[in-house]
Structure formats: structure tokens, C-alpha cells
Length: 140
Image (cartoon, rainbow, N blue to C red; front, side, top):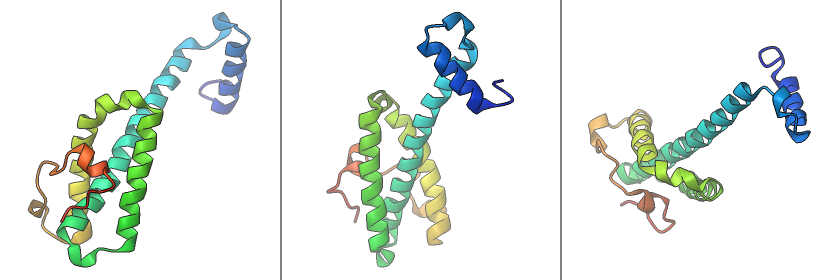
């Protein structure tokens, strides 16, 4: 049923777990799904960081194009990152790795969106994570 009707499978597994019928539960697939949920949380961290870092790069390297929309995006991503990390505190250990990957994506997108040459943007993230998420930080 796992492969044919995931929704039905998930409901059946939840009912089995709630009833304490572990022997009847599809433990292997349940474990895979739980691991997948963890990976999803990490992907959300990276995705939000990439959006934030992209807009910080545009803010810094294209000051003449700054807009209320960019400012709002930065503020929203900061707020959402704070909530995401509050809800998933163990992800804090993954922040350095997430910043590295997210910055690589942000740098590529910044070059595409601004029309500036990719070497315009530093190869390494120029800001610490704490700076990037600080509501008082605006790169100039």
C-alpha cells in the first residue's frame, strides 16, 4: 500500500501506532518517512538562507535598486528563520554547512538577477550567520 496509496498507508500506520500494534506497522517505511521529514526541515533552512543571502547581496551590490520589496523579503526571511530554528533547535548545528551551500546558490542567483559579473560577489559569504539574521544589519 505504501507505493500504491501513500495517504491510505499513512493513515493506516498512524492508527496502528496509536493502537500500539507495532508488530503490524511498516516500521522500515515509517523510519524512512521520519528521516525524510528531517531532511525537509534542513532543506527549508537552506532555502530560506539562500533567499535572505541573495537579497543581502543585491542590497549591498546594487544599492541604486533597493526597494521596499527587497527590505520586506529580508525582514520576512529573518523572522521565518528565527521561528524555524526555534521549532527545530538541533538544526543550529547545521547552520555553518547550510550557510555555505545557501551562499553558493545566492551568489549564482545574484549574478543572474543583477546582471553583475559573478566575481563581483565574494566567493565566501561575507557575513556571519548572526549578522545575516540580525534585524539591525543592513550591508552598505
